[in-house]
Structures are given as C-alpha cells and as structure tokens.
Image (cartoon, rainbow, N blue to C red; front, side):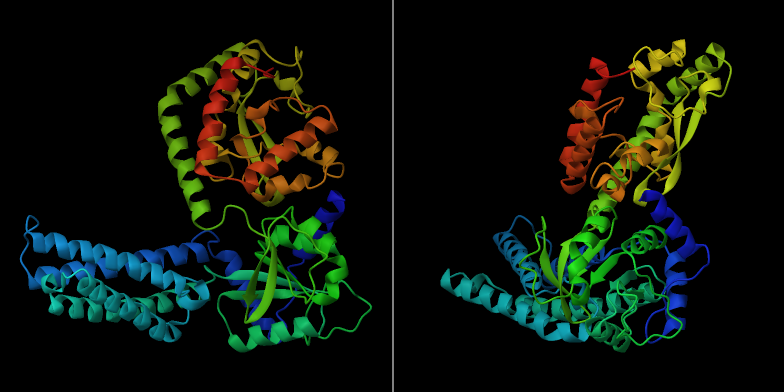
Length: 504
C-alpha cells in the first residue's frame, strides 16, 4: 500500500501537473506555484488572531493611559491616579472580552474591516455606559473625569478601526504572496462541489487556493466546469498529492459520503484538516468534530492539523532555544566523543541515515557511529550483545550519547527535541500495512526522545505488538501535546537514561 502511494505521488508531481482551479485554471497554477515558494510557517490564522488581539490590547490600554497623562500629571501616589488606573484596567478587560464574544478575532471578521465598525462601536459603547452606571451605583461618579472617559472612548474606537484597516492591507498583501494561503482539495465532483467552487471563484479570496477536484467516480459526469483540469479517482492519489504539495484542507462532498470513513482513515496519517459537506453525519463517529464554514458554505470538521498556529510557534522556539543551549554546554563533550570514536575503530565519527520525518518526507538523521563501519549498510535494529557494536559504541548507546548529534537536526528544523522517534525506512515498510494509522505519527516532526520511549518502549521493536504500543503512545502525544507534557518527557528521559533500561 505504501509503495503504491509513493509511486502515485511520483506520477502526480514529477510531471509538474496538478488539478487546475475550476473556472480559472491558469490563475490556480500561478497561485499554487507561488504558494509553494512562499514560507509555509510565516503566519497562520491563529497567529493572526493573536496578533490582532495584542494590537487591540495595546491600543485600548495605551489610549486610556495617554489621555490620562495629558489630562492629569503623573502622580501614582494619589487616590485619583489609582482610581482611574483601576477603571482603565477593568474597562480594557471588558472591552477585549467583548471583542472576543462579538467574534472580532475570527479570521473571517479580521479580513472584512468594514463589517467590524458596528460591532467595535457597540462593544466600546456598552463598556463605556457600563462603567458610567457602575460609578453611579457605587456613588463614585464625582471622582470620574468625564473628559477622560469621553476622550478614551473616542480615541480607542478610532484607533482600533484604523488598526483593523491596516491589518486588512497587510493580510491581503500576505495572502497575495502566498504566506497565508490555505491549499484546499475537494473530493467529489458533484453539484455541491460546483456550488462551492463557484462561491470561491466569485469571492476571489487570496487566502484560499483551490488546487483541484479529486473525483472518486471516474465513470460519472463531473458537475464542475473545468478547463484543462486533472482529476484523480483514488484515495491513494489524494494522499500522495497531499504529501508532495503541502495540502492544508480536504473537503469531502455529499456524493463521496459512502467513502467518508475511507478518506478519514487515510487522511488521519497526514497533517491536514478534514471537512465534510453533507446534510447527515449522524452515522459517522469522530473523536473531535465541530461546525465551521468555507466561503459561506457550512462544513463539519472531522480532523485537525496538530501543532498549528501558536502551539507550533511555541514548540519550535522551545526546540531551538534548548537545542542551542545544549550545544553550547556539551559541545566540548561531543568533540571528545568524535575523537574517541575515530581512535577506537576506522570509519567516520558520524553515522548518517535516511529516515522519514514530517509528512513522511525523507531526511538525514545524524548520530555518533556505534557500529563497525563495514556494517553501515545494514538496517536491522541493534540487539542485546550485538556483535556489530564497537567498544566505545556500547558505552555510548548505554547512556544514549550516540543521539547527541541529532541536536543538529533540531537546529536545522528536520526534528524536534521531543516527538515520535524516526524509524529506519525498512522498519516503516515492514509495519506500515500491519498497524493502523502507522504513518499518522508523521503528522508532526520526529523527536530525539518521545512519550513512547519514557514509557518503556525504548530500543528494539522486534514484534508487531511492541511496535503497535509505540504507535499508540506516539499518537497520544500528538493529540495531547502541551509544554507541560514536553517538560515531563524531558525529565523522564533523564531518568530513563540513568536507569539504562532497554539501552544496548
């Protein structure tokens, strides 16, 4: 099954062809090429929402404080200063919460600033009136500066709306350059797909790149009008395309509902969001789902991209900072180990091997060589008392010091400090078809250590049962990631290394 997917991927991508955007194929090709060249990790919609929230917070707090300083002098020890500062903090918190409840931090709202005017004015006005009524109720209205209150209200409304317009210009520029573009594939060339395509075409939304239609019914007449478009008729084609083209979302229409479970099963291996357009989903079960919309068309989200937006940024920063700190601290030790390896046996100090990483893409993993160089071509896992292991190699493997060069992989972005351990390619081929959702562990970057390793699944995975348990732990980590869990795994890794369990 895996070989067939990879072969299909080569046939899709090596020719340079892909499904054209229905209704405007030439534009679709240019946008797909442009998006492929753009930085995929520069911004996400969740990050945009967070940055807009931060901008609003600075404006709301800043305008209130600036107006106060212009109206009064700096005197933090006076009751008036404390009173107005408390009012400013309470009013700002209520305003930002009101913006959130009004949906002003949803990406769809942020990119339409003209429609935000009424809600921004309404929220700020309600907060203004609430503060005035509260002051009267508490009989402290005499302490209020009406000039400050009215000036703060007018300034924050004006600057928030101007900032939203500025964000709209910036985001549209980013969308046109491909930095915020979401690449979407539609499965099912029926009337429902045609309506969705028509809506997207009319909106000319720079944040949506419809890469094409995957028709699972090759013998049926397509309801979508296309010119020079390429359509695929199998789930394997869709998975292969997604691996090669950094697909963000897959939308399955009602005509493909009979194959919904099949698509969900296959796409769960990929870092893509999975949505369904259909009137009846009562018979379908998913761990998590919610209603959403695209181009005004309601959808049901059945799968999510793990570690997206701020979560991805936080984990990436944590990886880079900790890896650089460790490199500085143990750099001399790594040089000493490399020298000892060279003196102990002939061959290079580093062992380099191709393995599969994020989205099942091959990369070179670096480790200290622990086996004699004449066995470098062998791919079977090390066993207890393995005759291939050198004297210094046995010591390095016992304390997991052979893994230290993978810090270079973390710094260059091909690995994380914590994540599913990357397996040798033959091991992937051996177990992929025997274990359900095996490739779902590649939805995030592989790690030097992981949740499976600190739960007793370190070392050789000689049986399908043992490998299945490792996959279960890997998937649990992917679906439940948090900084706390990463720190827990780091400390547990130190204990596991000291105990030397399953280290050989």
